[in-house]
Amino acid sequence: MRALIVLAALLFATPASADRFALTYDGFGLGFVPVGGVTVDADVSDEGYDISASLRSRGILNLFERTNIQASASGVITEGVVRWQRYDLDHHYSRKHRTISMRADEAGAITSQIEPEYRTWGEPPATEEERRTSRDPLSNIIAMAIDVGRSRRCEGSYPTFDGRYHYLLQLSGGDIDDYDGGGYEGEVLKCDLSYTAVSGFNENDSGRRRVTRGEAWFALMPDTTFAPPVRISTPLSAGGATIRLASFRRAIVDVQYSTDATTTP
Image 1: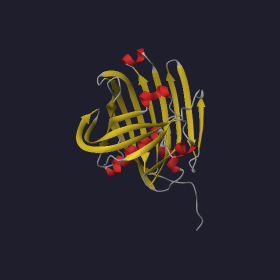
Image 2: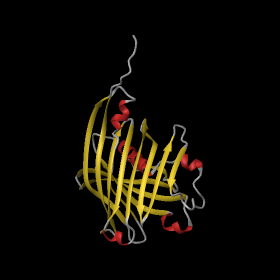
Image 3: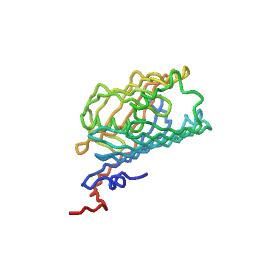
């Protein structure tokens, strides 16, 4: 994975630091049945971010739909606001394979390449305006973690577009509690999480149209404004699904950016 410091070194000539996180999560259905594992690597600085994630099904889920997902995203951060620039996804599922590549320019225009293309784009399909005003799924994880880390509040709406589906994630509520698990020990902010489908869905997607109540817990660390999630749960008709932190590693990298540019006195 490309390190953020390489990109930033080409653009800035001032000292800075980057947070690097290596996180793994275990997934459970019905509250206790192992269904998969998630790995997340994230580099986050004041100027930008680079995140990659993988999901691999296991256990009982493999009896129904073997899934392997690789995704990555990157973008810039301006005064705490996340602006995504790149999103790539490689999805193997039920003996099928789809790749999605999206790019956003400075004006917000999105170009995408999807192989194979979807047979239908939903009723109604996502509009150009919805695409422009959304972030990709991974970039919205970064945005949530930054917003929670800065404000220590559960608030905000996060329009999301993944190449076909446009949906809204919202944080609300909020209780601070102690947490000890998966290598992290400290305070967490427990937020209510809601998910509302907006466009790109078909009638047979009814189970994905609205998650009325879920939870997302974010790690609150005293020396950073980035609060990665340690637990996310969503209620499902089968009894609920949860991912929770299995391992946590963090490194703070101080960087002295330099440039080869010269100036004439």
